[in-house]
Amino acid sequence: MSDITVRAVHAEDFAQWRVLYRGYADFYEVEQTEEAAATVWAWVTDPGHEVSALVAEDAAGRLVGLAHYRPFSRPLSATVGCFLDDLFVAPEHRGSGAADRLLGALRELAAARGWSVVRWITADDNHRARSKYDQVATRTMWVTYDMAPGL
Image 1 (tube, rainbow, N blue to C red):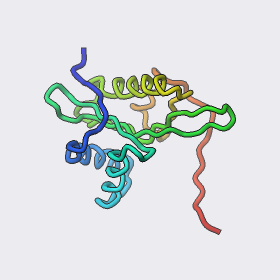
Image 2: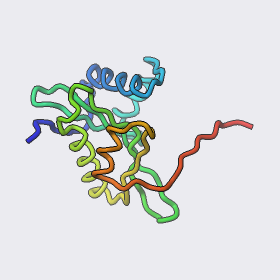
Image 3: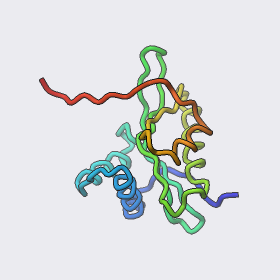
């Protein structure tokens, strides 16, 4: 059995969370400033903000994974769902059960809050993650688009 546990992020987790979040940004080749990371940290540690975070930690108390999530309204079904924005497990801890534990905790949290779905997107070429996701969720037919704001 895995020695990985999942819990809500704590204020004292910043340094370890930052290492993980930097790894996540690097994985997706996204430049992330310290200012942007500080903004996200402020969000996930503010109980009044919509974005929350879970972390996976090993038996020694080291953070090995993170999940950022938020509720979203689903007008067509008149329900609220959970959107998983970011899921990352440190490369050296992949296969440890951390991803399973984080996804399982989100499933339980969604059930406890009466949310109708846990939804996320991933890169088409993220084959390892997609293999895991195919085990725990149903791939949808939806295609994602991004439109820049402005006139």
